Amino acid sequence: MSNDAAILGRVIRAISGECRVCHCHGDACSVGLGEMCVWMDGLRTLCSNPKCLAIYAARKKFEKRQRRRRYAA
Image 1 (cartoon, rainbow, N blue to C red):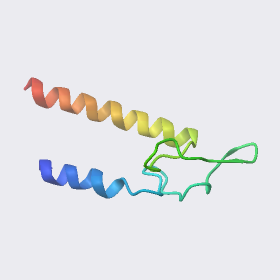
Image 2: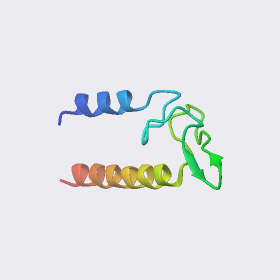
Image 3: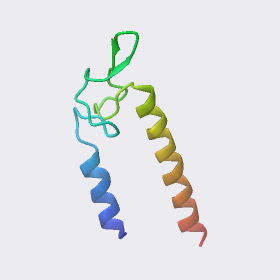
């Protein structure tokens, strides 16, 4: 994947008002015990659903590892 395609992919994924993981529109996810999700960032691109937070953290860790490999080679 080219660098331009990677940048475009990140821009497309991060739409304000839509979770970048589950694609909910705010208080649409149930996080348990009748609670609904809330936005975790100012841009409103990540909801508070624990599954979304775990997936987002894993993606960030993977991307960081990929950057290290790219610069080490």
